Amino acid sequence: MAIIEARGLTKRFDGLMAVDHIDLDVEEGEIFGFLGPNGAGKTTTIKMLTTLLKPSEGEAKVCGYDVVKQPDLVRRSIGVVFQEPALDDQLTGRENLDFHARLYGLNRREREERIEEVLELVGLADRADELVKNYSGGMRRRLEIARGFIHHPRILFLDEPTLGLDVQTRRAIWNYIMKLNKKEGITIFLTTHYLEEADKLSDRVAIIDNGKILAVDSPRKLKDMIGSDVITLRCSEPNRLKNILESISWVRDVKHHGEELSIYVEIGETKIPKIIKIAEENGIRISSITLREPTLEDVYLNFTGKTIREEAKPTIRRPPPRFRRWR
Amino acid sequence: MNSPELQAIYVMWMRQLKRFMRARSRLIANIIQPFFFLAFLGLGLRPIKLPGLITGMSYLDFLAPGMIAMSIIFASMFAGVSIIWDRQFGFLKEILVAPVSRLSIVIGRTFGGATVSIIQGFIILAVSILFGVKINLMGLIPGLFLMLLIAFFAVGFGIALASRMEDPHAFSLIMNLVMMPATFLSTAFFPLESTTSWLRIMIYMNPLTYIVDGLRGCLTNMFSISPWIDLTVTVFLCAATMSIGTYLFNKSEA
Image 1 (cartoon, rainbow over the protein chains, first blue to last red):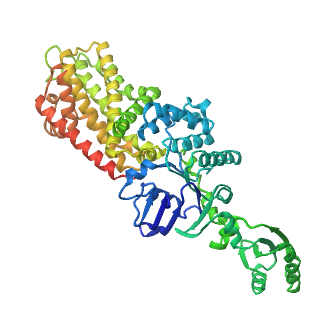
Image 2 (image 1 turned 180 degrees about the vertical axis):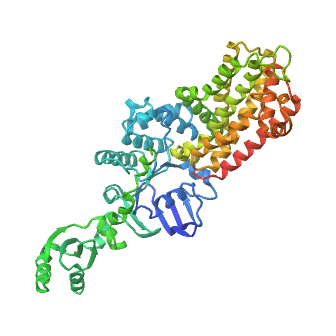
């Protein structure tokens, strides 16, 4: 039985479809990645699954409990790390954990044991008695992750766990998440718009765009779906070359995005000379050409017709949420 | 203390106490205003003769209970309204996603706010005594009871406001445009007996009047209104803001 089960889950905000009839089955023990651009409906989905928002339509069961009818039982069995920091920075790290452990009804002995354990796991034992306001962004995230699983939840929800963190810290967080999944056997449901994150961490990935799930599978299988190789090139007339290539039998697909063409083929190294020849015969000048294995980016492009970076662009101008509060 | 709901009340209370102990600047900011009023207005106007004051009572004696009430009301309102900051800083989500009822969260915050504001009220009381204010010691027990009611009323009011307000800046607007004039018209600064006509009507219509009069009565034996009316109004206000606050907080989303 799936540990998270959603059927036709929908949320409308004033007529806007934030989440549009999605079906989900997350298996116990897996790391499930929810990949999509900002505004795709990831946070709204998490809020519904964690009982913070009521669905407009459809239903969802978490650990076998209905999120609308049995919110308390759902809450007891999950841990949540929100996208925006949710710590009291006037308290110390340990006090934040103690606050949480008490809210979840752990007794004194359990609290003491467990707080030490989780602090150790996220490497914060030596800084536990400092006020959170003196913590760095990465430390705060680690503390929040530690807090999220202190009460032995069966599922840990992580909403954009590494948003706004530098590369090194991001990798460290990934390690903690994987360790947690292995050591404590917790099912992890994480949302992200970082392709690498979804690829590295997830056993299975769901690609979501405009509130709809477009594909669900393991990163490997998703990549296999689009072919073994991707040839990316820049040329003088991308549209015309795309039309020409699309009629060729060994070309599985061609996508045009920005100034680049992505061509999905098998055994790419033998196809490069052929493509160059075709372009020359048609008087199209190729300025660069590369061959690589498909990434989740290609999968994403394949399903949505755009790259996730193109999607993310307009929101970059807005300060990221974790800094917005300082204004 | 093993029931989760009791634990929730306890941690919410404890958290406010800890924050209060650590934020000394806030404590000073909260008590500086009533302190200045007492020190400058009270000592400066001490010899003034006002109608309604009982024999042997100076203006400073009259002013002190009002300032205690004012500091409790403002500090409690702030404690209630601080839900807005919790929402702004995200901490509210941590509380709302926990498997405890919102009622426990409201109760915990109310007790926390009341404890903190009554400590501040007692600081003002101690300062008053240092300045030579004559306090009726027998009245301290009903006075403390009244202080609790006052604190509950103001925390409830703050929670209600916070549940409807998105913007923390609106709070200072309400403080300046509503709470300050209401305090001036509450007989905290001048007795009911020294006013006439429309001003007196406004004072009677102001709920804070009964709160201030009740507390002054307990601490100095000077009642301008009947103690039972004061108590009834205060209990009613307390019940009203607490239930409205709980109701609105229940409906609000993180």
